[in-house]
Structure formats: C-alpha cells, structure tokens
Image 1: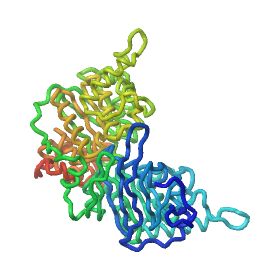
Image 2: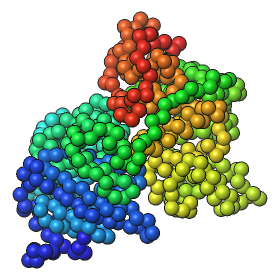
Image 3: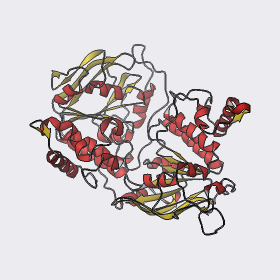
Length: 563
C-alpha cells in the first residue's frame, strides 16, 4: 500500500478519503471495497501474510478462519487502526490509504464490534452523533434535529429504539443497533460486523439478522465475522476463508457445505469425535444445598459426582453464572451451603474454594480469567504460586517449567512463554485459563461458557479435554448457552429459569426442544405449586453443523422436575 494519500492530480496515486464522500455509492452487485494481498507484521510475528477480501454492494459476505488466522488484523486494517506493510485497499473504485479510524469513517467504512463502547450517561441520539452534533443559532446543539434524524434511521432499520433514552442499561443487542445507526448517519457504505452475535440471545440474533437484511436491501456491503457456521448459511451470500494469515478460499455460500468450510479453515478433515462411553460416576464431590441469593437465585440444590459432567442450561439472565460465582466464593449468598467431598466450604472465600480443590474458568476470560499484561507463563502459574514459592520468592524458571509442561499438554500455540498473553488468539487464551486451573489438579472444575468466541477446531479440542478430565475422575459443572455442546458433553443437564431450577434431564432424555421448553416455562402445563409458566423468548444457539449430528436422540419421556 502506498505510504501517503494523493491529492487527486496523479491518476496512479491513492485518492484522498475526502474525495470518496463525493463519489456515488456503488450499484448493487458492484465492488464496494477490495483489499488485495495485504501483509502486516509485528516484530518477528507475521499476523497477516496475504489478506484479500472483496465486498460487493447489497451483499453480506462472511469472513471465516480459526483463531489466529488473521481475521482481527484484517478488520483493523479496514478500520484504519493498523496500516499494512504492503498490499492495496480500493474503496468505491479508488485506491486509498487509511491513516486512522477517522479516515476509515470518511471513506464510508464502519466497524461494529462484539461489545460496543457507548458513553453510558449520554442519550442514544447523543452517542450516534457524538462530535458532530447538529447546531442551531448561537452554536447550541439542536437536540430536536438530532433525535429526529436518529428516529428516522431506526425507522429505516425497523427497530423501535427511543433516541432520547440514556444508553446506560441498554442490552448488547441494542448497543449494536445504536452503532449501526451511527454508521448509517455517517453514510457508511461498508459495514464490518466482528462476531456481533457472540453475546446475544436467539431472539436478539433474529432481530440483528433482520437489521442486516435491511442494510443489504439498502445497498450496503456487509462483512460478517462469526464462528457459527449455521449463521453463515442463514445470512450470507459469499464467504472468504483465511488460514495462517492467508486467503485460501472465496466462493458463494450456496456452493459449499459446512464440511467444505471447516476443511478450508483447518487445512484438513476435522476428526469427528463422538462422546464415547464414560465410566460410571464415583462419589459426590460437590454438593450444593438450597443455595439462595435474594433477587438472583433461589433454593438451588444439585450434586456433581467424580467423573461426571453436569451442565447448567437456561436463558441469559437465568442465574447460572451467578450460582457458579457464589459456589467459588466470588459473590456472597444469603442461605444454603456448599460441600466439597463432604466438607463444608467457607462462604465467600475463593481462597477456601481453591484449597478445597475447586477450579473456576469464568465466562469472560479477558476480564476475569487472565491478567492481559502479564506473560503466558505468569498467567499459567497464577493459581499455583504457593506451590512454586521457594524462600519467599517465585523463580521465573519454575514458572517457565510449569507453563511449558501445560502448554505442551494442551497444544497452546505461542511465540514465547514470556510474551504477553494478550498476543494469543482467543482459543489459546482459553487454553491458558484451563492450564492455570488444571495445574492445580482440581477435584471439581467449574467452566462457564468454555468455548465462547473460539473456533471450531479449538472448540472440539476443549470438548475432548473436558471429557478426558471426567474420565480421569474430575467432577465438572459446566455452564453453556450452546445446546449442541450441552448435549454432546454432559451426563446430566439441569435447566434454570428465572433464578430457579426448572427441570433435570439425563443425557438420553435431553433434546434441544425439551431444554428450551423448560428454560422458557413451556415444558408442560404446570400445577400451581410448581414454577410459573409465563413464557419468555428462547435463548439458544442453533446447532453447530460439526456437532449437531452427535447430540442425543429425541425422547418422549417427560422431563423430571427438580425438587
């Protein structure tokens, strides 16, 4: 890519992005953006070797690849965050150089990230027009004009969102709509969506897809990044696959199967692992009795045995993660108790939980599971410092030996163990969190959304690891919103609804339909002394094509209620 933007006289020089604002929008089917042979290195690490993607107006184009394939680097080049070392970027038929995010916005490119960052104390309209508010006489902000334009944009999108409401408290889905509205207010012709559905419920995903279809119908070019292949088949017309920093495939979605896409991503046939036979569970290692935290969860009782995987399923907000945090001692609870191997666990004490043999892999690995500025080896050793300490000191060589052992066992991909863990892909970061706890040889392992945001091949590795841990006698309590994962990995499934346990299934009894019915209160007409059945929208992810065929067969036995 050229080092600087031309001013317009030289036909071979890149266009100034300001000129693009005056250029007409590409007609439907024409190329809106083309990144060709982009490369980007960070020191000795080549993050992107040959990044190429072509986006057409009126099309939703998928970008697929394993963690570490170069997708994030490519997106940051399009966003103007990174400048490539080589390659060309053509927008609306003109070669451009993006010197920063402002230049990308001026070129009509908008990026919608998985977790938008709005100003919480400003209104929706103020967030959409921040830094470029319409003015009236006396250079005062014209709130009426701003809200009217925001309302018109939301009307175009078919979303009933109040421009005058404060952003604080908006769901992730609504925040994403605000970001999309901001992009439209900037006349963005290319909209990049980076894993927008990772934190959304099924109903929110359906609404987002309606918005994406509206954008497509209005002639926008949409780049859609997701690890969920079923979403690609639902919303996208073409797909580009990257592997090891290189472009390997671009084709119409209609020409490909899920296996074709997986094969392109991983460079080989992905081994189809069935669950296999698990040994008979042993003694109870974790017992939760009538655990209650007012307003969050009520009367939760369950047991996990050695060598058993017990899943907590349910809608987002049903209280599953909060139960896990209370068991591990992060949050306090008001009543009830927890026993580990028959001994009472001290309340609100993570140190006590660790000493009792509990490990906890949290839902948000970046904020709660890792210290992002610390090295890979330091993060692996964090939960084992007492064992590594000698004469009051922690030797780097001891950390390195521990981390090297577990990195090899879990096949963690890294450049150097002394590199910050932030340099690893999402899947490898998750493996570091697992290594941190597995190095303590836990009796009970609690995993909250263990495969969120990681690619298909790494997801299969994590599933295999959890099943191997169960075979080795570890009791596992797993929280997951991906029902194919729940059905594949679990021995028993407990469903939570509105802070209460609503149903229990054995693996042979469970189906996706039954779990959803229990989670939404629609399992059956319930007697008055049981949980109310005041339905709620389903919150389940559609089956992953790589695992759906492995889920349990349908059963006609009604679900067993949890006392």
